Length: 463
Image 1 (spheres, rainbow, N blue to C red):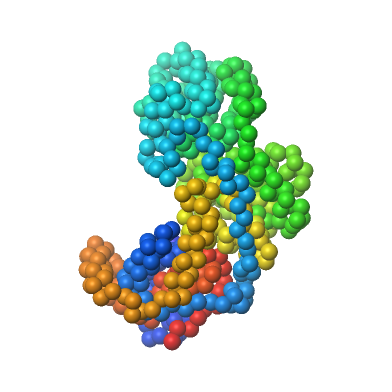
Image 2: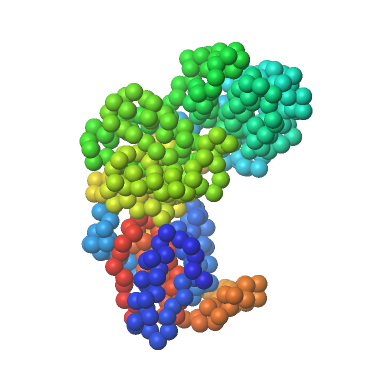
């Protein structure tokens, strides 16, 4: 079973290497990002123990810094910098605590706050703009009914744009309303925190629309909040990128990580339209998985995604704003700066994002953090994983756990007959771990775990 994965070439090379040294060629079972996503010490230990038990791990090898350097990774001394640790604490009063937020409750929580008149002034005013637009649209489109209380947020804009308009006025109203729906969607998905993102999205999107009736309902809203919002994270991003450009000059190659697809568009737009950054020679493009659009208006084809990566790789642009899609599989050796615009969610993202910057003296800047997953907490979890890897001994495998793992494996084989032949081969397992890559070798099959950054690493001979 070979996963479709950007590092498949490395896996194939390992297969050929083992084929030369062993009687039977190995089978590549899969790839993953790290030994565990856990953050707390107990769960990290449990996760690694479970992995070792299921794969019958009996040796863990580590690469040296010299071997990393020979493999093309020179960012071993990169430092993690937290710029504005308090930004994420500037929340709207009455919101659910960050640690207690459940993604499936975002919409119901939002409407609960609206109905209780506890929504933020920004959200309240934006909903009033939408109500006005909907009242103006009803005579133009008799079949129109507001979808906001009955449909998913991703369906709002598609619904209003899917109704056939009668004349230019109806079309302009539909487009304006659809953009306002998307602005509310940003608020809902961020628990009302990303007001600045919502505002810049509207500013970016409503500009190209024909002025007239759309201005009457949205222009006053934009003018009002241009003076109220602080745009703190955007200002801090601007400061970081300008400082990096000043210190690195033409060599700057920065990757800015964001949480959502629409954020990739908005942040790239902000960078390109901000005079201070454009005059300094900063230019950005966006990147995310091309399987679905960011909004009905904002799309990225696979061809365009490849083009954007190519332009970043050969320095036609110097900033790539991307979602987690670029955490693994994208290797630009000249990259020397990583900026996390949104808070890091787990240790895997920390290690992978940091590792995109491969040059010596690279920078890894985190603009803000969650108070329940601080940067220090994630770094601590990463260091603990390395410590447990160094201290791993095969004798620590629990016999009872091995029996349970056997039962689980048998159940998996019965569920997936196609994997049965590969799993029958068995064999001893060796894991090669370094600061940038974890390779899992076996005599009869191979799993690869990429833990941090390097893409090219010399193959270890397991004896």
